[in-house]
Image (cartoon, rainbow, N blue to C red; front, top):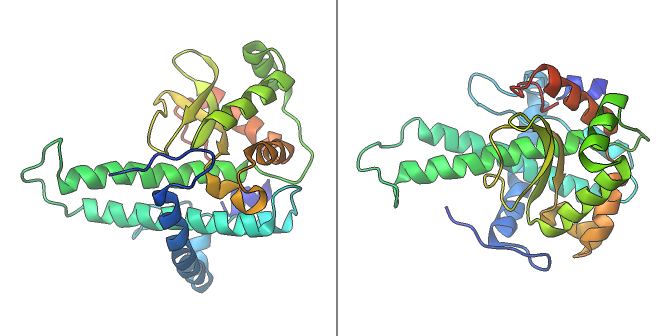
Length: 262
């Protein structure tokens, strides 16, 4: 857990058997962008120590390389390395789009098409792509963990038991195309599960995330091909309940979600 503190528009529809054009492009770009960002981080220790941003960029990639030494069962280092490159690409694109928005023309804007509209839309995709991946990587560990009593009580109240919640989580993971986000629903005042087909679609504004499950093909195809069920078993086995519990406690104390991305 100390490591976490120190380092911390147009789409193609996809299904379980095929990778979208967007995913292929992002994975191709990730190798180049990820290498560049890693070299920059090595050259400037202050970047790695920054709290998520600096004066030049809104977003600084967090360092999750420690996951490679954890040797998580069911998640190979090759799979994780490629996934981390994709995350770095989202960071780079989020900063690029934020920069372009500072100077984009506001003339002739309309809801059918305008450069400003496209930049705003794609910025939400890139930013959520970065944040959800940070939540995802942080809720992975090779350690054996379990939910705190407070979180267990909340899961029991909402789902019947922890085992039933896990079944619900995996079933949700089988039917979504992008993400499953578990969080505290501030409007309903209980835990909730929502499914996202893309980073910036169907994510409720009143939800403080406590658990992120990536079910895009890039999260598992190197290890499992199209066998998503085996990946979901591996994810659950490596779920960091300590982090999920801490996020839950912070959500109770800090419902704005300002500290919920640890």
